[in-house]
Every structure is written in structure tokens, then in C-alpha cells.
Length: 605
Image: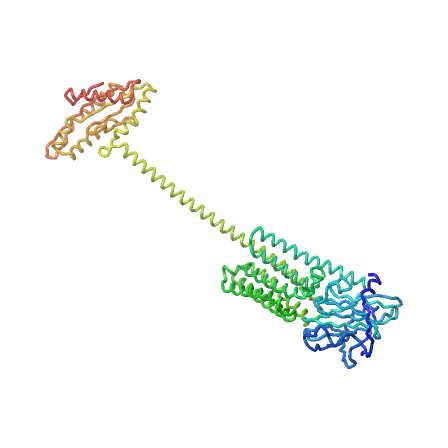
């Protein structure tokens, strides 16, 4: 940095030095070891503010107005931090350049959330001053840097004094150091890389989770992205980046961005925990508790616009730590209940809880070395983000395995049901086939004689005749009729008549034994026998045997007497050019002729 630029950062002051100030150990600025022991050369005292109304307008306006009676306290080698901020803190540092050359350095104050800082550089009442802090626009800092830099330029043998007056509504941390420009640039470059990796990683993880939310609709991806962005904004604001890059002209937002981002982060991780730990489905009471915590988080966010910074920062921090503890406890409970992703959730919150507690103690002035705590907090957040994303991967794998298990079980159940239904269907089809077979048999058989009926003859005779035409083999048809059967029914009744019909059917079955032969009850007391591959002589032979056996068969009547049935028969041999109906009609005419000729005889058509 050029000397003219550094010199231009100071404004002249016309205050006259009127009181000698107590000596503080002078620091040899050109000695690196002496610079490293800066806290051994600091003196400070606290100026009580008269009232809240003039807290930003202290009674001591410049070093020349410091009363001679003020008792300065030596730094004694410890980093200065003040948890209570009910006053203005004055610091004094005496410097000398003992080298043979002029040099310049930077006095750095690496803590961003300080309301008002006034720096005076000079000696013997001739001071140059600069006023800055996050109650001023960021441009009030003569060096464009997230923290506060005070250039110090000393000629060989020259000495100077630096006074600082600091006031803030929050805790005050004063991590001071004297750095050579080259070392400061190197350190800044290293931190820039570290911060770039950290915040870039947060942004990439946030975008990735938002894309997962858009593609899957799973709410905890959105809450995780929300949490990472809010936490990143909190650390961005604590580190002074948000004031430098996001809202440099809004001092109010530079202050309130810290508790506001704290409240947003608390809301986000509460919603994330409720969704990720599957609280709704398993723990209705815990779900109600987390809903209350989410509502209180919204209240904390709203209070940022109503309460002063000093009050809301404590409320937001204490409430955030309480929510972290509660979420940690709930995670342990879910882990003990066998919810495996909760293990990684608990580990993530363990690192976060530890880092947050240490960082909060440092931020409120209870622990020194704030920069180291900031790095620790970033590491804790980084580890937590990695563990949480790993936990989400484990949850996705668990759900995927559960889904695959359900799918396999459903598939097996479906296969079992399909097999069962198939077997039932096969059994039903078998039963239906049997029923159809029985029905078919009932439809083509005579229920009394168990012979085929006329319907069967009508259906099969065309096929038998067609086969005879193709093979040029004869087909014979015998029509038979029981003689004087009506008189038997009238004399002895229909039951006896049915018995006689069964006797005739039995006789027909005995003489039509070939597989291709067909015996039919044609209707009433009429019967038919179809004899494929049988000529006239063969048909006459079969008919004579049937009629002869009936003559020999005596049937005992209900009155104790015996009767003998006789049959009349008409025979026809199929002609290849006639229809089946004509064939039957010729046989029927022959039967009629046999009945007319005196019965108990055979007539051939």
C-alpha cells in the first residue's frame, strides 16, 4: 500500500494536549517479538456512560480531555474482552521505531461487531483521528477491510501514541495486533482462501439440497438448505463480510443481521430436525414441542425489529443454544428407539453444540482469542454440515432399503396371491369343465335310460354320414318301437312302463357294443341304433338279435303276471346323395311299414 494512501486515512485534530498521561510500557514496533507481546504494552480504563440517552456522546471527547486522575490498567499480556458494555473503553499504546529506516505497520482490531470506534494517532496533543464502527457506513473505514485497520507510519527514531475509544451495545472483544503490510497481506490471502472454501462449500451444499428438494419434494432438503444459508449468513455477519459486501450503507442491518440470522438459523434447524428425525409419525408430543420451538423462533426473529441489539443478541443466543440442546436430546431419543440416521444426526449436533458454546463464550467476552474461536466455529459448522448430509444419505439409503423391502414383500405377496388365484382359477375351470361335461351329458343323454337322446343323434348323424361319404363305407340306421306300449302304461302305470323302457335300453347297449355304434332313445318308446361301417345284412343281423332277445325276456308286472315286450324295426342304409333327414325319414317309413305289417318284425327301406 502506498504511503500517500495510508497518510490520507487520517483527519486532523485541533485539540490541545492539556494533561500529561500516565506512562505505559513503550513498544518497539520494529521488533517482531515486541509486536507479538502487544498486550504487555497496552493500558486501558473504562469510562462510565452518564445515561443511555448520551451513550454515543461520551463526556471525554478526545485524549486531551482525559482527566489526570484516571487510573489506567495494564494489559498484563492478556487479550482484552469485556462481557459488560455499560461504558466506553479507552486503550492506550505507545510505539517507537528504533530501526535506521522509516517503516509502516497496521494496528489491526479483528472483531467486526463494534458500534463505535474512534482512533487517535499522534503525541503531545497533536493527534490525527478517525471515527468508524458498524454504526457508521462502511465507507467510514479508510481501508476497505472487514475488520478495523489503523495505519502507523514512523520515521527512524520517531515515537507516537495511539488512543482508542470503543463503545458497543454488545460484548466487546479486542483481538489486537501490529502487522507489517506484507505479513498482513499473506495472512489475509490465506484467510480469503479459507473463507472462500467454507462459504463456497456452504453455498454449493445449499444449492444441491434445494435441487434435491425440487426434484423429490422432500421437505428436510429445503430445511437443510435454509439452515446452511442462515448459518452462513450469521458467520458472514460476525466476520464483517456482510457489512462489507452486502449492505455497506445500512449500519442498522449490519448490527441486526447477527441476531436476525441467529433466529433464522434456529428456525431452520428446528424444522429440519422435526422433518429429518421423522417426529410427526413417531413422536406426537415431541412434534408438538418442536412446533412450539419453531413458533418461538419466529417470535425471536420478530423481536429483532423491536428490541435493542444488546437485548436481542442475548435472547437469540441463549434461545439458540437451548434449541440445540433440545434437538440433541431428541436425536439421542430417536437413536435409542432404533432410528439409525439419528446416530449421525447426534454426532453432527455434538460438534455443533461444542463449537457454538465456545464461540458464544468468545463472542460475549468470556473467552479470549476470538479469531481462533471463529476458525473453530467454521470447522464445527463444516463438520456438522458434512455429517448432516451424510445422515441424509443414510436416511435415503434406509428409506430406499425399506422401499425395496416393501416392494419385494409386495411382489412376493402378489406372486403368492396370483399363484393362489391361478390355482383357484384352475380349480374353478376344472369344476366348470366337469360341470359343463355333466351339463353336456345331461343335454345329450336321456335321463331315464342313460342312452343318448335325439338331440345327440341330430348333432352326430351328419358327421357319421359325412364320414361314410368320404370312406365310401355303408352306414346303417335302425329305428325301433315298442309294440303296444301305450296299453302297458295304461294297464300297469308309467313306473312299470319306465322299467320296460330301461329293459329295452339295456338290450340295445348289449348289441351296439362297438365304439362307433350309437344307441339312442329317439322319443317316448322309440329307439334308434346307428351302425357305421355296417351294410344291410349286418344291420338285419343286429336287429334280429335285438328283437329275438326281447321276445325271450319276460318282465314281471305289478300284478304278479309276466309280460313279454316285442319291438318293430325299420332299417335304412345311407345313400351318399341324401341328407341325414332323408336318411332318418326312410328308416321311419320302414318302421311304419313294420308296424303296419303286424309288428314284431323287421322291414328294410
